[in-house]
Image 1 (cartoon, rainbow, N blue to C red):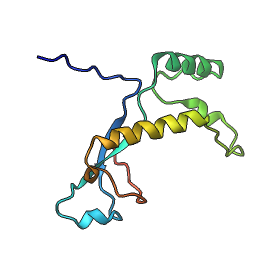
Image 2 (image 1 turned 90 degrees about the vertical axis):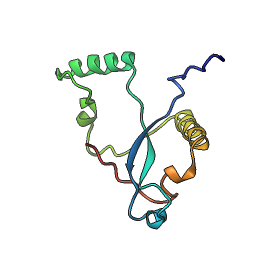
Image 3 (image 1 turned 45 degrees about the vertical axis):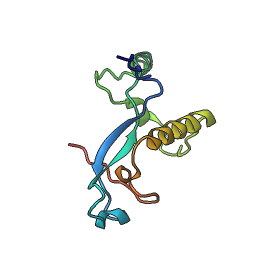
Image 4 (image 1 turned 30 degrees about the vertical axis):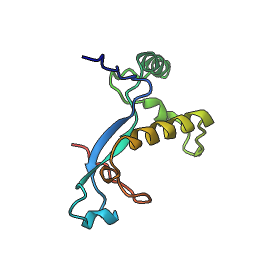
Length: 119
């Protein structure tokens, strides 16, 4: 029996199963699934979590949960967000690679928003 390939968690893409948008043209297609896969961000690395918690302690925030309370400390006038070029390129490559292995009917049509429903 051949050896199975291990999943590289650093390059893996995680998806969330959500209902197809009513504005999606495939909503009327009976053969298309009612739910679609939408890529989501992965879990925070342990080192990054520890750094964030240490930074929160500097500002007197001692909650022990996964919320990043530092984002609420920013000034409301600062509406700019800058991403390094390589981060966005790498994310789009990983999403496209994952989409290539799945049928197109499990994804929302291009140009239509998807509402995230959490249970």
